[in-house]
Length: 306
Image 1 (cartoon, rainbow, N blue to C red):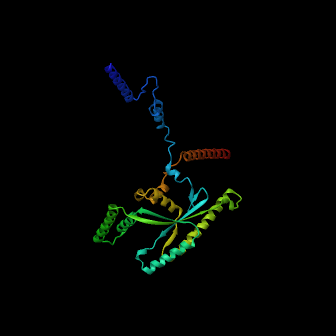
Image 2 (image 1 turned 135 degrees about the vertical axis):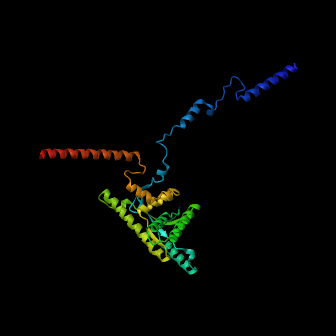
Image 3 (image 1 turned 120 degrees about the vertical axis):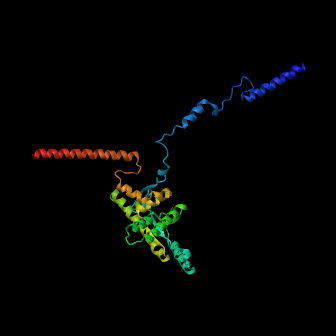
């Protein structure tokens, strides 16, 4: 009798262990728990999620960086809230080559300018790879066009060009560009205009005058510290942004070369949106229709005249 009880207990323990290993309910009348992650319908949903985003609906991260920018023109960056930004390039003074008195004079001029301004000014430093392709090209052209150079001078010039190119290619060389950023916001309600075009013109003129006043104040004050401040034109703003997002490529694919290539290109080489392409196609079709109508009118006039 005791042996039967022991065998029954051993069988119950083995049954419970077997059910626990299979992750099934111990009692047979209990329903099996189905986890949400193990259901085939959920697996199908997960597979479908991988293909929900199409290629056309992919996020455009680079375009989203300029959502607030409305236009870059008139040597200014205009934002959607009628804020205008003007950038000035600064040629600094070699501070550590000055004497102690000269350094203190430079500090006094700079501190007095900072204490005098009552508007926000941002400082922007940009590290660029040094590009010596233009001076090297000028050296090659001058050597090629010079007729009074002997063989020793030509060999010396060629060795100097080789040394400069090796100097640039062996280790990345950087130069720091320094900029002052002035921003001014205009309330369109404070400007009276008869039309939208007049309002637009007054907004641009007023913002440009105010930002130029701030830039000239910095220019006249920092000139005493031997720091030259100059306005960065519209093309310079584009070049600044180009170096920001194309730091390594900007050495080989220079912005000046891209501008010249774009000027001489038969078609626009920059990426365009689908809406812009459709608008260009419509404009071409309208132009062709107008030309055809003009030809018909000329033919009818010629026939009537004959």
